[in-house]
Image (cartoon, helix red, strand yellow):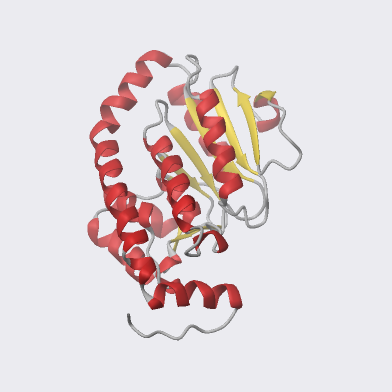
Length: 269
């Protein structure tokens, strides 16, 4: 079935909304589409829109899944660097981490379709889901270290998903990996030319036919300990980020240099 034929109901949203929200598959699938291409920046407005949609629709008893996707050639270039500056980063981190935990603790599976660049805060949101369907051109990475900061949510999620050593490689180097390498790591579930259709196919074959109430029990049983570990660690890394790292010269310098489009000067302190 085509995506157009699959759409059952599109909710109205303000024209300036960064997110498109629709209920598909007879109301059993919630589709959330990042709608500010090409960057699809995960800023305060995007985070708030995602949080609001999840708050509103995850409680629907017939819901069996969420599909998170994006318009344009890239899933997301990441979070807003301006919102990472010292005077605003506390609120930004708290709202992003609340969204990540909402996804980690989702009562139904979260399927994610990724094309092109999926970086920084974008990958943190993606990694909070259950299954990632990636196009062959997808590039996934946590480049925060290059700006002299670390990726808090990814520091909690990636070791759980791909193991400590592979997570440390991505977090310490800031490098991006291709869809195929991410598949070998176990970060990506499927590589497909049309990742949205691959996610629909998975939903239609495996999630649509089952009892929605029993599916929620299965998700809770499978994710309960994982969710508890992520919640506890996020509290620790958020404090480390805000109360220690953001008081260093180099972290502020790295962010300022990026905004000012110049090379940073590290003092190693």
